[in-house]
Image (cartoon, rainbow, N blue to C red; front, side):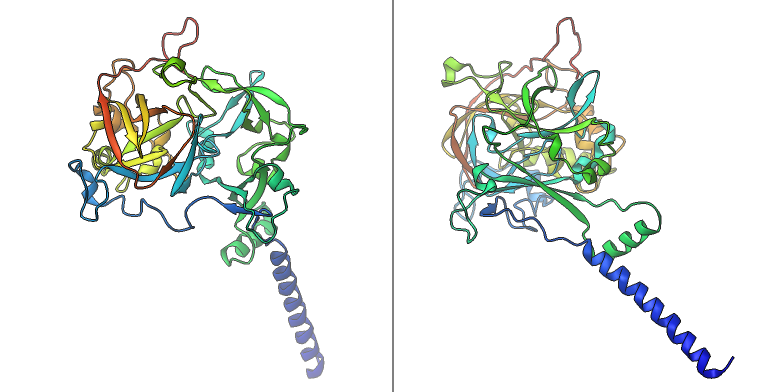
Length: 425
């Protein structure tokens, strides 16, 4: 072969390779989309990468402290952190302050995924072994902000009083194309996350079906947002969109789940306590020292057991371990709150909220070894307290003072279906 012809073929071959690589590069670039920023809105919550629980593993939280003030003049018994969980069993939104409404912290557990079986919709949570990936689904709450440069009172985002943006990991397809996508994600050329948004409050003329969804023994009417779920989320949660066996529900404000077990009455507080998709009560409280006691006993299996596994709304510091077991009424930031009952634990905290991995035994095994303390449910362990505020609307803030107003005995009352002997789903 003449030398000049060999050079020409080499150049052509190299050019083809360069063209192919360039094509792949631009293909991956096309998969990168701007993060959703709802028009005229601001995101609720602490800035990304910050947390009031950044020191949660500090040994100082292993012991309680006397009621009073710390060396910085702050109440020694106070709110350490606040969390809202807008989408049940998914990642939480950490807050510096939160409005409290009759159903609990504003936006808390207003949405839930549900699966269709036995001719009805049933909520799906981290308790369900096939739904570990819910731990990797991250909701954000965006609310209208009149000071935003793109604020428009007539925009869909403002008309719905805000939106929830839902993010989840991208699943690479099978085959060679999937390998290319994985390489692009590794190189940060294409998005690792997918996103979509849903209205916080649908308009009065919206076409979302109102259907019952089963949560424990209740079947409240809720708004079916299933039409808004993209196929990529169905794929991430191993659901076939053509069979419509998975949907997203929004709690209906006109169909509250009223609470009667262990709760103050309407005569006590002027309204009947209610909740959205929380298991049973509006607010869940955990004590740092109590959690550290449990974590120390689980360290052989989980060296750092985060308090976030237990998905509390209010985390307090100051009291000694398990002092909260006998609280009947407390004041937080000056608002009287009833501690209705202890939190009876399931195996949900076995799921790591960061990775979605489920530990085969802990912390459930350790909890059951020494925290079966409530005569109302001697088979399950307790950690934390369930709260019902004495008024419908107020504000909670990190740093709010905690005062104990009344102590006494607690006995959990199970929610049983007719003829049922053991509480269950």
